[in-house]
Image (cartoon, rainbow, N blue to C red):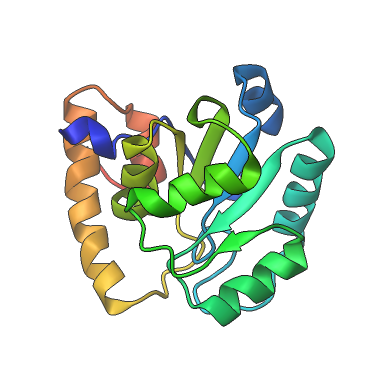
Length: 179
C-alpha cells in the first residue's frame, strides 16, 4: 500500500528534470501540475526557466497537458500561455483526470510521466494509473492551509519510504527531511 506513494524519481524542480533521460526511458508525454510545480501558488507569471523547459520538451516531441486541482480561469490562462491543453479542477488523485489527459494526448500510461509537488495528489494519482511519477520540491512555501497540514504527513510517508528502501537518502534530503 505504501508503494502507491513512492515516486519513480525525485528532483529539485521542473527544470532539473532531464528530458533526454526521460526520452531514452521511452517517456513521450508529460502531465504537469501547476501550483508549486510550474509556478508559485497563486502566481500568474511563468518563470523564464520553466517556459524554456516546456519549449524544449515540445521541440523534443513530448506531448504535454496540465492537470491541476486549481480554478478553471487560472489554469486555462497558464495553459494558454504555455500552449498546452489543460484539465482544471481535476480532483487529483482521482483516476478520471489522468485518463482524460491520456485521451487528450493520445498516449498510453507506459509512455507518460506525471510531474508534481505533492505525494497525495500527483504521485498517488499517477501511480494509481501506472504512470511514471516525478516528485519535485514545491516552488514556494506559500500554499493552502490544508496543503501545509498535508505536507507534515508527506514527510512521515517519505521517511517511511526511505526506511523501506523505496527512496534513497538523497531523495529524502531533497525534501529537507533528515533521516
